[in-house]
Length: 519
Image (tube, rainbow, N blue to C red):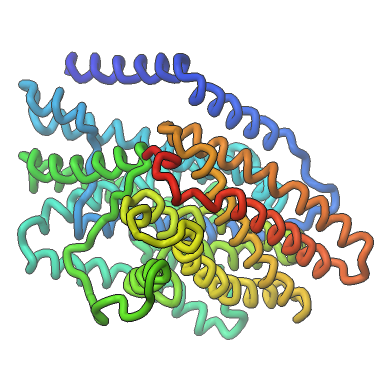
């Protein structure tokens, strides 16, 4: 235990030293802290419309369930690891029992799970304005989130330990996992369909009632969190007890089923370490599934530079779930949920701004960005500008389809007119072009940098600066022109089109010299 205590103290001390001695991280941390302080002292509008807290707790339950099932599902493939490669080299070769090392990993991962929920802190402003929560409310939601993530990672490790090396056991685990998902959907869906009222109101009532205990274990955690918001005492106490029991059971089974877990941990740690290293260095590291449903073979169309467009189109077809890939579907669901909650207070523009904020992440994770990091696009004997247009073309097509799928329901939820909905679709496509051009600008100007932290910080800063004139133009158009909201949205479209065209023109040689992208 003395060795593990020394290792934990040394890691913490070295992390503090690295923060102080690395200007980029220090500046970024100060900037984030300043944003957090500014957010805390921002006062809500006096006429802000408060939403019932039942919608908040239902959303919390949905978030917990989504995170648990997504993380636990990884146990069917690669499992989870609580260790770094340094831990493997220092601890696994030391004369320390495997159970002691396991509990060290558990406590270490508990802190990591809490840090993963730190992004929820920056949602305090609109949650405070919309639901009237305070910092203690947010802290309890954050603790519940950390507990859910931690439980999901334990479940992932246990699933992998039980199913590794056996297709039969893996098939049984998939069936049990699918049954749990169906049970969770039925716990909310059946009461919502049989309530006799609004489908949404019925789902919210089910997520806040005793049936939420069937969403295991995310429903248990959310039931305990609801005690802070006036939830049922019996349901909350049962949820808290079941949550703790589940956690203890997971730890017990891991220690009993696979006490000598070195081989499993080595594989999972190697996979996570390789992916993390590739991400830091800006390299492409795709996670390939064990079984691939190929379907149609070959690109089938395209000559010259257009072959990249059809290549991306085929890859996206294989990766998508329903018209969009998994990340885009999650972002679309979050956008529609935000639009429903803000339909009476923020209106169409607030929901549209939130949708564009999420689009920033989906655009930056597109295949065209990864294509810039591969050598093949530089080696194809075609004009650089043609190749640049070809690798971006599929992202433009996908963004246009996503704009139709997301903006039309969002406009209907917010009660917008057909003209405003059409303007929302057009403006969303304009922002997709703006984000693509912004990524090209970053690759052209900052492609030589190796620090992903600095690149990410400067990326957000540059995108904010470039978007401000369009926002000012939209505000002026909304005031001066008779079309109001539609005029504001179309003003952003005009600005984004002009700015994107200028950026693409000045970055047209980004594929001409591979040295521009030093990664």
